[in-house]
Image 1 (cartoon, rainbow, N blue to C red):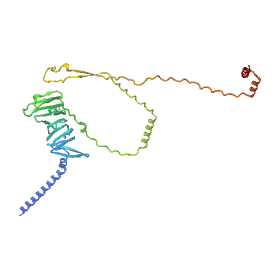
Image 2 (cartoon, one colour):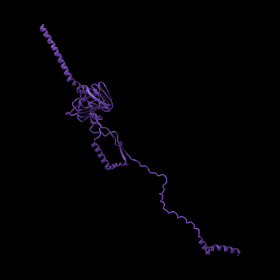
Image 3 (spheres, rainbow, N blue to C red):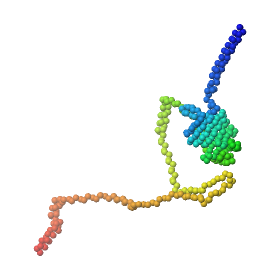
Image 4 (cartoon, helix red, strand yellow):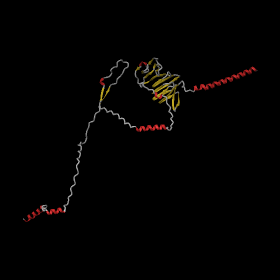
Length: 367
């Protein structure tokens, strides 16, 4: 019996030690492993947030709210439609992908491998580091950019309005492979090619009509608004403000700058040349002259001046009136004084004519 009891006690002790060890492991995991599991590191299938004015996302995605703004997080298997304008994807590993609509594409993510299945539209990818490894798939071709000497990747892949595929490597190079024939080419850095009908034999190099600018301004870190507390000014600040105001009052006002003279309108003739449509053949060493010089038309445009026509009568200018002095008032008749009447009576010569006429009348009667 004693050996059996000792064995039973040993089993109890071992069970207690095992329980204590399990509790210790759980406490250790809760203290050290839980914080690492709760970190904000993205999962292996997270692509990054997308922003745009007219976009729709279907399939796996997640929504998060940051500083009162709702963001859509793309995950592996998301299907995106950009109806118009542009959309911007911020990659979780660093870098951006700008999409110019109308566009339709889907994304697949596995650890550090990112695949974009492009149906329509143009994408412009800028990746700073070695991850993620980007591959763009289309119906017939696949384009895989790769860095040169550790420089960032700057690649544009898309379709122009005619349906031809355009590829541009601004930084780094792009390997283009035909999925059916496994034929591949490499677009060098600063190179630009145009592929029609998905055939590498129809490749043409030169400037294409694809363009999609990166929206780098939106990717900058937004600075939260700072809080400013109002307070009363100190006596020193008030004295300084009064001094500056007094200086501004004493300074003489500056004369306004003279307005720039308005250029006079040119009345000269304008020449315009109309030419027939021209064509360019990249495969030809010498371009043929396939237009007739007689079809070139030169148009001279002039402005006809209107004829001046006067209507009505033209009169001379009125002469200025001379300044004349006002007429002198007529002198009033003065009544003769009594003394003057007496003088007239005394002087018969003054009335000689009247008496002479009367006397001559009577003489004619009696003669």
